Each structure stands twice: as C-alpha cells, then as structure tokens.
Length: 153
Image 1 (tube, rainbow, N blue to C red):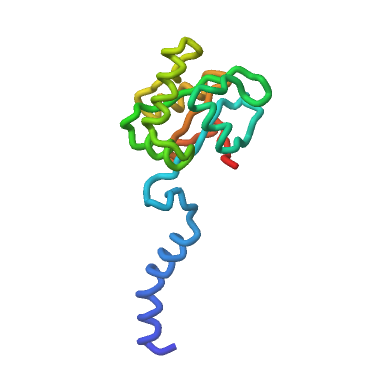
Image 2 (image 1 turned 180 degrees about the vertical axis):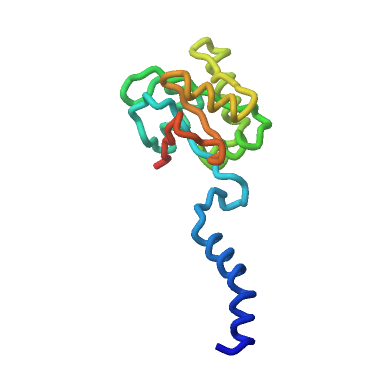
C-alpha cells in the first residue's frame, strides 16, 4: 500500500465509521424531525394495539374502558404542550382544540369527566407506570420498561 493510500485510509476511517453508526442507529425522530411520540399504557393492560378510531374515542373520553372491559384512566399534557399537539395531530388525526371540545361536552353534559392533565412527560410516565388501566403518550426518548407501548393500527 502506498503512503498516500495509507494516509487516505487513516483520515477517512473515522468519518466512515461515524456515517455507518448513524445509518445503523435506531431512528427515534418523526418525519418532521421532532422526537417520535408513542402511546403508552400501564403494564397490566392486556391490549397491545389500538386502531385510530378506538384510540381517538378513548382520548376524547367517549370510551371509558379498554376493549377487555378494564377501567380506563386517561392522562394528557396541557393543550399548548408541543407533545400534546403532535400526538393529537399525528397520532389521533385531530386538532388539540377538537379534543378540548369533546372533553367540555362530556363534562358540561354531566355524562363524564375530562382526562387528567399532567404538567410534564416525566409526570405522565410516573402516573402511567403506577396507575392500573392508565393510558397516555410520551416522546420515545422518555420511554422506559415501567410502561408498555401501545401500537396504532
């Protein structure tokens, strides 16, 4: 090997390894470049996936139980939280104000209650990990093994 080829190999190897590592690393960003948001539930929930209509009904507080009849407890972030906006739009295909209208409707009609609002994703994770039957959403980067991911069909 010539001295010039050896020098090129030495210089390009770190760059090549860095590029390869980036290609092989798991991607946790959504298409818009923001962290991927996932729906999560307490470990005791038997359901592992929901279709979009069922998830929308659960978060709109129109469905109060899991498909197997277990009581449902829904947690959400404030309406102006970026993760809440992303989950509503990307996960449920609704605008945050539409969810709020749905919650207002069940509360003011006396037929139900609004979901519990938490202040942060860390609080969301803690509540879901500790309250059986609970459901919420967090950025994938906050995910740990105390909760399970509920996939969206």
